[in-house]
Image (cartoon, rainbow, N blue to C red; front, side, top):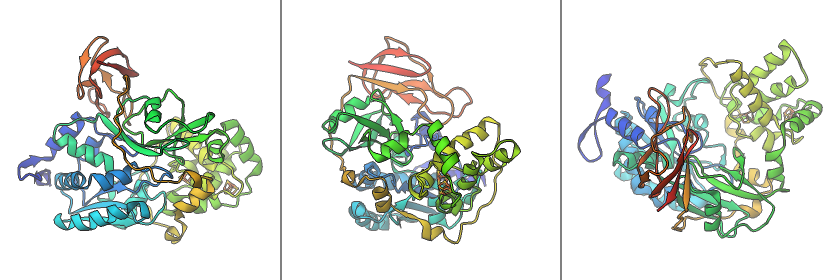
Length: 456
Ligand code: SF4
Ligand code: SF4
């Protein structure tokens, strides 16, 4: 099937898939939706369906909705490019049919008529519609196997922003900017575009500052967010910052420490199984049962090991603990810890076919209910894009802001760089991504962790 790699590009020129793969690798494109998987590996395959993941189901985030609305022409050209390069017969722009996307629904219904084999696919407003296994199942009717990839069922999916980066890469432009949403306790909830490596404080200034003094910061939304400090910097996977008062219910849940949730879980879990019954990966037929992982807390020896294995398919989506559990326990954290423990012990999942549960369609969690459960209604307001110029004095470019090996710095202190200069390269033969200067300036320092550039 070697001929599949040879296609005509959107401009009528002959191209090879290798050409796209090389350009995407050179440009440092990674999954912008959070995982940071190097995209040149993803596009180097043949599939039937390519899917733009515009679901954006984290409460309060807006950047994908804004990209869908404002960058439709570039996005559709990128879909056509990837579809052709991967030999796909179907290109899908998937996003939610909700008030915030009304304009996007109109735009894509109209514009996809001009693109052969490309359609828009409307999802319900539920969480986590953007999980790649659920999305691929919803769009294709096939469940990617546990331990496998969407590729195993003939699909490739990536975030909206990643597709735009692929289009840019094909035109020779590396990844140097990031769209993100500022939400929660900020004066002006807003979506902005900033240089990669921008410090959090510059993003906060663009949103008019904080509206409370004792706030905590969640990077990437709420459900799958990580708690970060004031010194955080924007990476290629930063989807947004949500500021919450430190005594807010959701922030308290996100920051509970392991000895506490282990202790409470051990004594309070009544094995009601709600966590399992609502687990999205359980509902697509993957081998995961968080109530059994909870049971492992009270066991030792072989029994504990057996029950712990029911965490192997956990993606840390948070549904079990932050929505389903009536006791407000933390099966999401306990399953995630257990999965990490299995990985440390060298456990490697075997690829196993999966079949969706008959209740799959009926246990989707409406985002409105999730937002209410997390007491976030007061922050649930539009955060539209504003072309605010964010010009940080210095950027900190992490050498590892993607899955795989860290990039190796190829500049040193005192070097002069301009936007797009390669400052970190993928190590020879490794999975990884290049890193580029995002401002013009002088390299202040460079080591295996980061390259710091001070603006000229
Ligand atoms: S939902 Fe909560 S109480 Fe019920 S089994 Fe799961 S962790 Fe235990
Ligand atoms: S966090 Fe909970 S609901 Fe989500 S995949 Fe893991 S066990 Fe399932």
